[in-house]
Image (cartoon, rainbow, N blue to C red; front, side, top):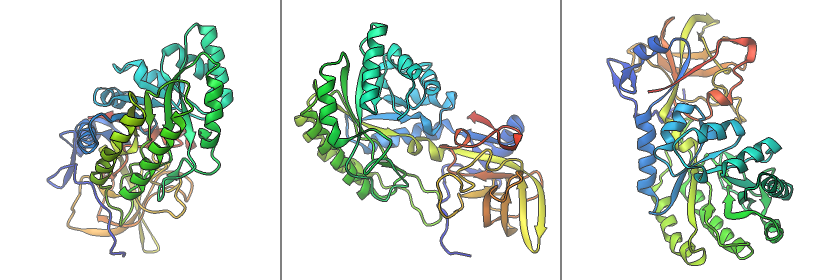
Length: 408
């Protein structure tokens, strides 16, 4: 076995060898919910937002990118502790508008907004992150038809990327946003349209654990925003410099150190205030706010040995948690942190593979991992599951039972 270990979260207490979440033993919660489920801890959600605010300079707005976890109860809770919500679909927009957050603090990004999407967003009075000239013209037309002036920011595809990011969202040719060099002409055209210009949305990447890479991207985003602001039809109100903050999933990965990120961003704020007076800086975070506050839980339904290798077969698998199976962007499959939730320490240990119930060899939740010896009825827990879990998975695949989500 490799000596490189997972960074297992210590935020969930363990009593009598059983994991607790939301102040409740996992075994009791499993009896309450039944079957396979995701559980999100509201205390951990609040603590993470509080931590982010303590690290970032005063005046920076924290927005929740709800695509990471659009469960309505989670979004309702997040709306009480963040400054804004960013949505990526009309269904997400409905959930966001059902919260107490004001429409003006909701923004909508996505490269393929339909006519219905644009109508809903403009009628609601939220901020559209425009991704093309055609989308801008459509928004202006729809605003005229509705008799209301669209609020819009330009999503910029920067001429740089977030180095070492798990998923690159900017730099080079991308389906996201408007190429930075094309933005001045777009802004010139906007002057002739009845659109309320709000600012820029610059998102260069996500899932980054290197503070120096995030710092560099933020510096470049601020400089790019300042340059483009010279062409704007009106003063900026918003400079959204994205997020990119990552969480550790795999062996050897360590948590992101936010302290230097906050310090360097603080050094940039005087430049922002001088060059773009009245604009507020937005940090847009999804995974970082919710990812470590959630777990996926599925019971063991069979235990078998095949030519000396132990397999635990669980009630749910990649149909519930595609990312943990390694089929959500991984090139080489690596294990998430996985444990037997009701035998967290377990004196008797073994090397096992945890597999789901589906008729495909891709249905793997843990491959040759050491954990406590488990029996039928024990509860397998996949940590780091608060983001891109249920809604990022093919839950209808093979028509297996659906997964439940609870906020505790």
